[in-house]
Amino acid sequence: MEHSKEIHELQYINRIYERILDEVDVGVHAVDETGKTIIYNKKMMQMESMDSLDVMNKNLLDVFMFKDDQASTLVKALQEGKETSNVKQTYFNNKGHEVTTINNTFPILVKNKISGAVEIANDVTKLERLMKGNMNSKGAPKYTFDSITGTSRSVLEVIENAKRASRTSSYVLIVGETGTGKELFAQSIHNASNRMTKPFISQNCAALPDNLIEGLLFGTKRGAFTGAVDHPGLFEQAEGGTLLLDEINSLNLTLQAKLLRVLQEKTIRRIGDTKDTPVDVRVIANINEDPIDAIANNHLRKDLYYRLGVVSIFIPPLRDRKEDIPLLVQDFIKKYNELFQMNVKGLRDDVMHSFQEYEWFGNVRELEHIIEAAMNIIMDEEEIMYSHLPFQYRNKIQMKERMIPISSVESFINESADVATPLKDQMERFEKTYIEHVLKNNHSNISRTAKFLGLSRQSLQYRMKKLHISI
Image 1 (spheres, rainbow, N blue to C red):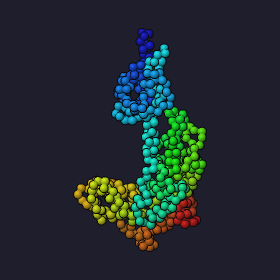
Image 2 (cartoon, rainbow, N blue to C red):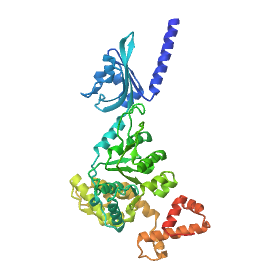
Image 3 (cartoon, helix red, strand yellow):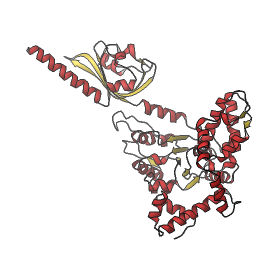
Image 4 (cartoon, rainbow, N blue to C red):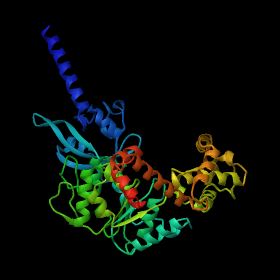
């Protein structure tokens, strides 16, 4: 009876140990004196993309493969009694997928005899791939100003301003909606500058969580935290060249403050380090919303905006440069003709007409995707017809036709001042009139007017200044 009670208690304690091992945020892998796995927790399974059945009770070297210049730290601990701390190791699981971990490994001694070994591991596979990807992207921007398609006045003006900015090393803020080609302009500036032979590194700030992006930007010092190794960040990797930070408004405000310090001091400090390292890097930042709105909504620090916006380039949306659509279409058809080995000549007139009527909230990127989708549908035809266009696009066009009767459009034109006025000027005139009307109804109260219009107070004031509205 007593023996049964002891067994029950041991089973209970084992269940507690197993639960604890599965809840900790580190991988735990233990082998017995023969090298067979006896402990393999849930985190280790996730890190190595393995199932416990693939590993448990099997010899470590029968399951995993190691590079010729690297031996398993777990095997070393078992065979040599060697204890290791914060050692980076790259190996392959049973499917041949590469895994990179930072390991703490030690032997298990019973009466001074090695009876097994344990490894506690932190996964750095994702960070390692990001680092390698950025290292491989050095000095490889493919776009120049010749790559930018457009003859509209608004685009030519932006190109001219960007070319002038390429003569200096001032920081640049590129503002534009998603899909307008912000990175194309950033690469063109780099390639036209005296930094063109140095690295160009691009990082989307929205693509990574904060705990990864900080180490990726500024680098890490060995021992700064569990698993940390000496590794240069993107600023050090881009030394002498250009660092493009895409969607800068997605960085949290604390990281923005650290970035501001780097821009002002021109030095970086790796995480865990005590000394500053000088850097010579030109930063170009992209933002996909109005900077005034970004500041008002706490997406962007005001002081960082002033520091980055030494040179501000505003890329117009496609709906404001529709005269460029035929040239853009021609470029995209040429691109996919070469890629798909096709011979498409152009668009049917009704398709081009629908393109000119469409609002293009996805901008140039949306136009390219529609051309690519249509050319996947074409068989032997030489022109893109309306039936080739993606369903989503045709559905949006049909909804627009149902929602906006032509009589309403004609009524608006008849009530407007001068039908010969360019659309952009007409829209600005209407916007000014409407804001003045709402201001009057709200007795010139900025806050109430902004709330009625669905704008922030700062955004309304920005538009009033732009449209020369006074109260």
